[in-house]
Length: 149
Image 1 (cartoon, one colour):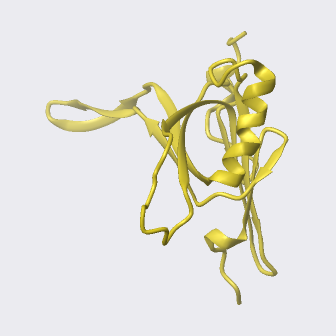
Image 2: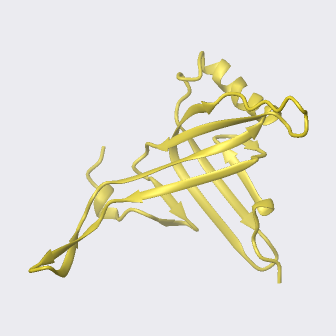
């Protein structure tokens, strides 16, 4: 049986299929337990956030660069949805990140020995109330986003 690996993922940034060198997304969920008399007694809700990094080679970076050119600037890019989907004969996995605001963090990573492709790291923060879906299941509850306009 073939397991899902990083090689199995296709990544869409908005309408663009890009090859990624690496990709991470981290959810920060600030729910926290409360105590009564020093003993755990339930929890309280807290903020949620999701951010991460995409690392692209120069060829794939140019795909996003053209989108930035069309928008007039990198900061002028509207937030993109990012979808990472993997399918093998025996398994599927999908992660959807909504309204990702892109920010270049490492513009250049040059190895003068020429042993590796030039890479660019682009950070992102999720900005949409749809937030994150994992295999089609939303991370946030319906109640959390119901009154957000």
